[in-house]
Amino acid sequence: MKQFKAGLVVGKFSPLHLGHELLIRRAMDACDATFIISYSLPELPGCEAHMRERWLRARFPDAVVLVVDADLPHNDDGELIHRRFCASLCLDRLGTTVEAVFTSEDYGDGFAVELGRCFSARTGRQLTVQHVNVDQARRIVPVSGTTVRGDPHAHRRFLSDVVYASFVQKVCFLGGESSGKTTLAAALAERLATAWVPEYGRELWVAQDGVLRYEDMARIGAMQLQREMQARPQAKRFLFCDTSPLTTLFYSREMFGRADPALVKMADARYDHFFLCAPDFEFIQDGTRRDADFRQQQHRWYQDELARRQLSYSALTGPLEQRIASAIAYLN
Image (cartoon, rainbow, N blue to C red; front, side, top):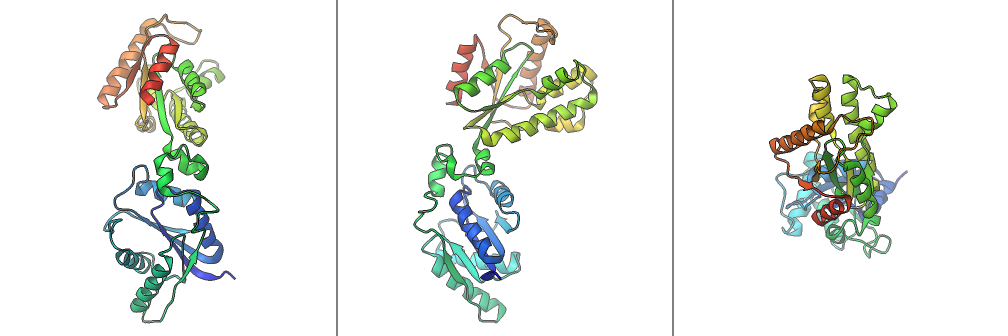
């Protein structure tokens, strides 16, 4: 038997850090059912409602999560407004009362009293809510949301992988064949002590002895995105991506004259930065590439496609060290 039938945790969780996770796990350990409510007006950058909901559901799949993003009080409104708003969410949106509210704040006692008063008034029964205070002094997890928002990378140790991954910027390198993007992605990852994602399409081409089928195209795009997702938590600040499904879309249309609708959708994948590697050095034939004219054709396609999609990008020119310096300057 647990101490309480139902418990409540409320927060902005902007972002969800390990101090919040300690609080929620204490509630789950003590309650048969744990309800988590999150709202913030205004939303804080990088911590929008859909992000908070994704974090909470990923980390606490056994809790009931309610993230509210409409018709809510401002963060600066008085305590009583927020307390009554939370009580109404419990009763009207979650269809429950709770026996305990878990906080790490000094307002917790008053919050519990007002919840009990609201529940009693609505149900016609005398209900009380107990406040459970967890690590208010921040001795177990010495961090705050404000601190983490200031620099999530410096405070990486206070974020779970799924949360930190949301703050890693994906940087995509595009370029025609023999334009140095693979070398550049690897070199930048080493220089900045982070991760990079190689081009899966090339790996599959080698594995299949230089033969790619139309059906492989969507598979390549999906695997590229999957590898990016898997690598993002291991990256530091930036994840360098050697190509994107946009490249696979180009090859599908070039080789087969068509593209799977799923691949067309994958080509819309979001990246924080695009670098387009210029074909301004001698074409190197490694036995897998077409020729210098095809490289120019591909480069022009990227220019046109990025413009059509209204995606800004930086052109990288010159030798490797010049490109590394230009990319780092832009990212900084």
